[in-house]
Image (cartoon, rainbow, N blue to C red):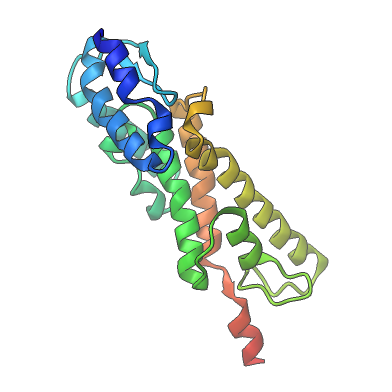
Length: 208
């Protein structure tokens, strides 16, 4: 069995259905080495040709450039944490993926809920007939209520597009480039800022 076939056999996504994070970890580690041979394992476990990595410092340079561009945009500190070298060494998707997961974690920390994805968003921000766990405002006017609903829809869209996609790695056929990463991470920065200012609505209403 040739090297390429061996790698594809070992990295077959069906082997990692119950451990996606381990699949991504192995893929990242292998790609650091394979890059010097002009090869890369994609999210479907296939080995493809890419431009050869020439120096170890390329990964550091890429991470540094992304972080500097985000600093210019004054993104939220919680987002900058995910621009580390090990996350952007091959592509920018992992930085986006991890930053997206941080949004869900912040919501859980602020609400005490143990849900995830759309269920977490609905339980945290829904106010139809009940007091939400979190509110962006007093929710007294139609405009304030529309903002709350729109923010919830934005969260669901971010989770569905940039996090759930990785959970179904064999179906992924796209790659985030630098400009995409900058735009997406800037949006996640906005989400973090709004979450920082969100009101613990249940406590607010109980206080009244």
